[in-house]
Length: 492
Image (cartoon, rainbow, N blue to C red; front, side):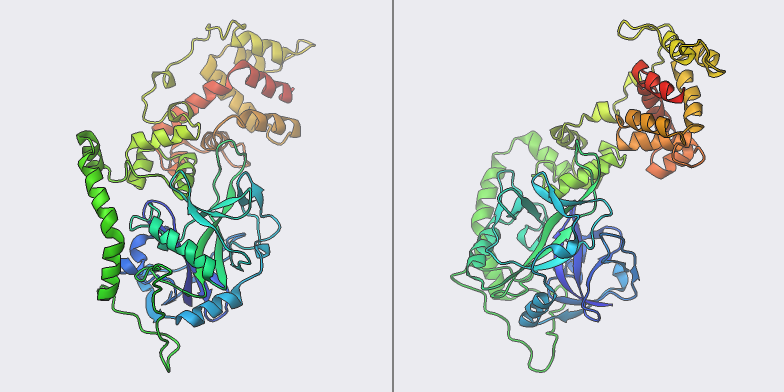
């Protein structure tokens, strides 16, 4: 499959997302092979840049709604063929563009201050739009690059050309130049895309959030990583199209850019480098040491990195695992989680060595001045007529941990009862997504056979012992009288 690259979006921790137009069909396409590393960018020796024509080799359609454009490919077999001429590139973008976001489908709605669709809903995830007004691109007070969609909606801007080499820090001079150029460009095409689904804190579902992947201007069509925008007063001279070829040759990978480009880059960044040198001289020794160990520990967080952090956390990864993946220290990860009102110790009790996790509660222990658990269970199971079935003596004689294991047997045999299913969802709704999933797999609550601790550990990438610890913690929480009473009433 041959495609021309129209979208270069930054993700997190040195990863990128690439999208373009299939030159054979004219359809939008997004090559996928796990997480694409930034080394695949042309400036790092890879094949991808805006306007680059790339042969992906053999591909396989793996898209599902709304991400119908996904195709699996092998980066090792990817071949760069050259660049599409700038004017032809913009004409292709215009021909593929829509007048609105309607192609994404009616499921795209405003959610808080963004636009999103529920997970697995929507008609497509990529769309080019002929933008009728002057787009406003800016860096907000938190150091994040944003696009003003309307008075009440702002979207993340992930165009890699507007970030520094770390793909984390917005290139403020470039953003200012772009905003000035947008005021003078007669036509603008914006490439939007839905991100991978993730669940925000205090939300009840995962959503695909809309973001602005790339900006294309008629008066600077297809500007590339190696040739950034220059000031409007001194615009970069447009390259001349080859007289007989539809594809202009691209310099060899690793070749230096022109001396003029080097000089412009030197002028643009010389002042900022001097300021940075003075700032580094005033940094305390302990911060210098921390930066040597964790280079990104003190760098600002991006919207995308926050999204990926929450997604990784809710998928069950520990703070240490996330820290290694993000190139930050675990303390920074925990601190960032707390900004989203997530208590790492209370939510997952990971790496804390919490003694309470292994502490067994005595069967005679009273909870908040209420009658003992056995008495509550006996009263609930007995019912008005005093009958309680075989489960009553078994539960009444058991300790807290054993009571919940026996209760699990009742749950796994009664999941088809609508009344009970509703009560179970209400009780499990108080758990995090990973804990609920572990309980469902362990007791076979989702129509499957109960799974072993090792099988569950293999699914979540954690040890058998860690699964046992999580189960013990969750069972203690579910063994509180209000939860037990609610479930057992539904079973009666």
